[in-house]
Length: 211
Image (cartoon, rainbow, N blue to C red; front, top):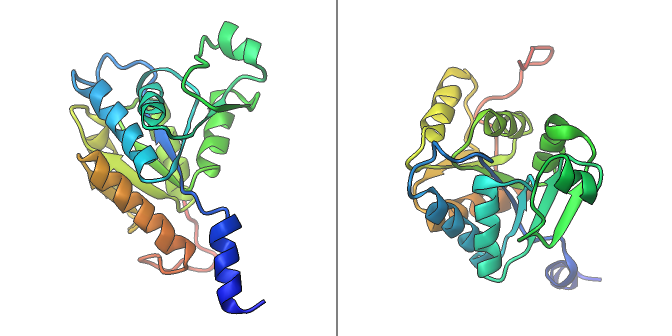
C-alpha cells in the first residue's frame, strides 16, 4: 500500500473525530442570565464543526451543552460517576437525556473526572465550580488542549489566575467569548498536536519535580 492509499484509508476509517469535553457547573445559579444560551451555542458549534461532545453526564452547564449538540444533530457521550443506570438516576440524581451513550465508571466524581478528561482530545471550561477546576488541572497536567469559554461568570478569570500563578508556560490553552471561534481554535490546536506540530514552550528538566 502506497502513501496515497494509506492517507485515503486513514480518512475513511481513521479515528479522527475530535472529542471535546465540556466542563462546567451542575448548579448554575452563579452563572449569569446568558449562561443557558451560551452553553447551548457552544454545544451547537461542537456539532456543527464535526466534533463529538463528552460531558460528565451531569446537570447544569454540561447538560445545556449536550442539549445544543443534539439540536444540531451531533453526538453526545456522558461519563457518569455511578456504576449503573439505576445508581446514576436514583443515587446521583443525574439525567439520561441528550446523551447517545453513557459510560458508567463507578468511580465517583474524582475518578470520573480523570476518565472524562483522559477520554477527550480537548477540554472546554465554561461556567464552573471546584469540579471544573479539578478537570482543568487534570487536563493541564496531561497536556491536553484547553479552551477557556469567557462569559458572564467568574470561572474564566479564576482559571486565568491559576494559569498566571502556575509558573509553567502553556501554549496549549486558548480563550474566547465566541463559541464558534473557541471551538474552531480548539479543533485546530488538537489537529496540530496530533500531527506533532505542537511543542512545549519549555523543555522538562531531567529529575526535576513537575508539581
